[in-house]
Amino acid sequence: DINGSVTLSNDIKMPYLGLGVYKTKNGEEVYNAVKHALDTGYKHIDTAAAYFNEEGVGKAIKEHQISRKDIFISTKVWNSDQGYDSTIKAFNNSLKKLDMEYIDLYLQHWPVKGKFKDTWRAMETLYEQGKIKAIGVCNFLQFQLEDLMESSNIKPMVNQVEFHPFLTQESLQKFCKNEEIQYQSWFPLMHGEAFKIEIFQELADKYHRTIAQILLRWNLQKDIIIIPKSKSKMHIIENSQLFDFEISEEDMFLLDSLNRDLRMGPDPANFNF
Ligand code: NAD
Image (cartoon, rainbow, N blue to C red):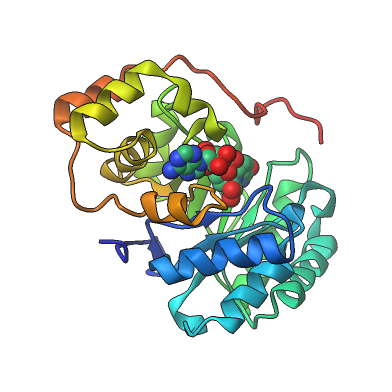
């Protein structure tokens, strides 16, 4: 059901469904999106320092009747704040903006070469101090995960990466599964591009569902955490109606077979921002 959750390697429970708030403006826009999501029953919000909307997210949560302990909030340290001292500072800044005493999941936004290990040490410190319930990364490829794990005490609990039928990275998925690193997808709806693709429409028609619901359900059946983004109440509700139907094994396989290693976002092995 909508409250289904996965147990991370450190026994913290993380809801399978969250609301993504990338490109959702601080103030009324993000406030309303978060409010609609909480009203619908979402228990998980994915923001980032780089989205510049942590205040609005925090305000919406605070003013809702939901209690802090029932909400799972993740935010991320931005690339220019990587490094030990600057990560501690960035974390405290996020905490202040969200107006919270702890964060459920703190993520590195991108694997900044030469810095991500120092960043990770800072995250380990904050985790040990109880200020973060779980720590993880985004956009790490296998070699970067191996490099990080070789030199650290705590394994990342989550890897949040670009994932949709055109970019499945099956070997990365397998690696994460073996290492008990929970896979989480961004761009699950291909940043909106999925709605133009015929094969998805055919599947949607077959199941009497929408394209969004097919792609999100495909993630869930693969044990992948989803954070679809929307500002519209109607779409926020639609994206949560995933727990009363099932995609057949055959159609799961069909979706898997569409992979063409197509990145819509930057390549984690080669980015410079
Ligand atoms: P997405 O794949 O979730 O697609 C969002 C687009 O689809 C929006 O234009 C939205 O209006 C539209 N949409 C949503 N639901 C719909 C529906 N039911 N019907 C029709 N249209 C619908 O892309 P995204 O927002 O870019 O990514 C999701 C989240 O992932 C972000 O909000 C963010 O939290 C996270 N993210 C993380 C990283 C990272 O580096 N860690 C990068 C990108 C995004």
